[in-house]
Length: 489
Ligand code: ATP
Ligand code: MG
Image 1 (cartoon, rainbow, N blue to C red):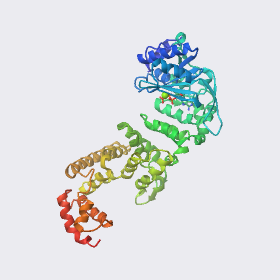
Image 2: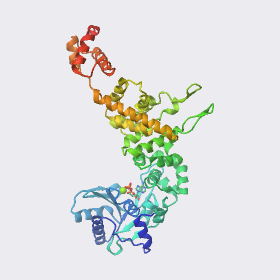
Image 3: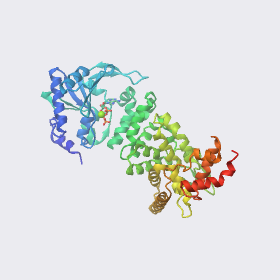
Image 4: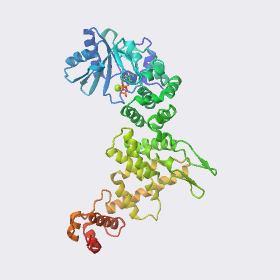
């Protein structure tokens, strides 16, 4: 079923879009912009995402924050006139690029003068010249992003669709307006954008365009990591991120910036025993997590959880395939990979690192014989992220065998119940030592030194082992008992 706007468009063969289905405040704004441009003898169009999303029926589900306009003439002068007319002084001018941005209510209105661009091979910074509307549309990344509506009064609402973008919207196809190799050579970031839009819109990348990306993927090397990651994070935040990653893998783009993930691919067989393909397993876990959470960093934890499996892979006759230590090694890799990808190195990285490090622990707690002590330690180490850790662990169950999946889920239910019970009883989630360093110095009559840490640790172990309750009085009694041992430092 096509979105209502596309059906409407089909019925309306004159290519005139009657702008009734857009929010009224946008319509009034567009009329104002058209009138101002007309009085300056300039053509003005709304272009790109807004027009595309209108035909896809996505305008209301998306929070519109920016609208792009192109004018034949000076974008900066038009923006200045429009900001005066709208009574806002919030305008930013980027002279070098010939663009200006007007802030109006909650919207960023971006104005650009229609331009021709030519590029040098070593940089994506274009040499810009003035051009016609057609020149401007030629330099756009995708046919579906090159649609525009005229806003001048006598042509208000007329659609310009020079590359059959509407048809591609209907056929759900990602395609470049001109020869894809030229489009991608001019700005290799467009290859990431092609995959990103395919992932967001659930479109297919047309064959020629796909092949051009495969061929030119290594040109991504001139693009900054920040720009690549901005697109990657948008892919990760789509409804079914596995689709975007599958495209990144098959277009050869993924290996340009994230080779560790590509190396997860493949299955070895020994003595008739195979293991899971960890690339596709990781994507299943990512999709599973995405069903229960929109959090970018929990999704990153899913991407990273098995990242260190390849170098820890072993086979033995007795144990079959094992990946001992991939959790600890993955945690060690996390800051390195985050730094290389220009991802943040603050608490968000530490959160991902923690979940990678702990992702096997809840599974180890699936047994009646597990002591409260082991549960307390996990609650303490995971802290407030324990619920997210459990979400990741549940997502990590990807067996094809439904009976197994049921059994594992059931096990996790039990672990979660025990976590709840232990936490209610012992309050170790945000645990701090009931005895302070000062108190230890006073009781032992010693100066600051390593001994304080050792004593603290012994108290902590006693509490976590359940030898003493998690209370000040009990801990102080315990300190009195052990103090002789530490008297001489
Ligand atoms: P959204 O904002 O929903 O992600 P959008 O289509 O508005 O999608 P923007 O990045 O805001 O995307 O860009 C606005 C328009 O500018 C695009 O629709 C496209 O026409 C053009 N554009 C943006 N980046 C490029 C690029 N790297 N190469 C060519 N054209 C581009
Ligand atoms: Mg936009």
